Image (cartoon, rainbow, N blue to C red; front, side, top):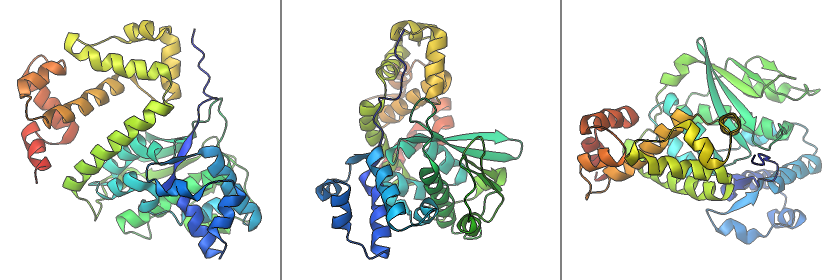
Length: 347
C-alpha cells in the first residue's frame, strides 16, 4: 500500500500574488525592502515572473503584517486589493472568458497557478451554485482565518471588477472560523448574510449569475492565454503532483490508441487497490471519467494545431472509432469544429 500522506507536499504561491503585500506596505508607508529582510526573503526572486514562494513564508508574512499593524481582519482588507494582475497569466485569462460559467470552470482548473494550498470546488444545489474554498494542506489542516478571509474577499471583489457590476453580491458567505468581535468590514464588503463557525468556507450565488457576460471577453486572446496556463500548470504539476498521479496521467495518455484503460487497471499499475485509488483521487477532487476527458481534450487541441496531422489521424490517436465522433467531441469541448478552432489560431 502506498503512503498517501499529503503533509510533506510543499505548497507555493506565485511571486506576483505576493505583491498584494507590497501594495499594503505602500499604503502604510512602510519600506518593502525592510519587510523582506524581516521575513528573510531576497528581493531578487521577484525579478523572475514564473518564480514561486513557499506558502508558509507567504502565510507568515501575512500574519506578520496583521500583528505589526494591528489589523485583526487583515485578510478582508488584502482581498480588496487583489486585481487580475496579482493572479498573473491566470488573471489575464479570466478577463477574456465569455461568461461567469466559463470563468468558474477556469478557476477550478487553473487557480493553483496563483496559490496551490487551496482549491476551488463548485457544487450545484437547486438554483444555487456554491463555491467551496478547500485546504490542500493535508490531514484536513485548515488554511486559517486570514487566508480564508483573503480568498473570499478577493473572489467577491474580482467578480465585481470583472463584470463591472459593483453592486454584485453573493447570496451568502460562510467561514469556518469564529465570529470576530467586529464584523463591520465583512458586512461592508459582502453585503449579504455571513455565517461563522460553519462546516465549510464557501460562497453561495444564484444560478443566473453563470450567464453574466464579461465585458472584456476576447476569444482569440483567451486561446493564447489558455495555452500559456497549460504550460505553466504542467510545469507546476511536475513539482507538486504525487508520483501516482503522474503515472495515472501518463498511462491514460498512452492508452487512447489501444482502446483506453479501466479504473481497475490504473489501480493495479499505480500499486493501489481500487478503493485506495478512489480515495486518493477524491483527495485531489479528481473524477476518473472527467480526468480522461480532460486529458483527451488537451491532446486534441494540441493535435488540431499540428498542420501535419489529418482529422482521421487525430481521431485514431485519441481512440475515437471514427472521425465524426471526434469532431462531435471537439465541438462539445470547445464550441467549435476543429477547422474553426484551427482558423482562430491564425487570426
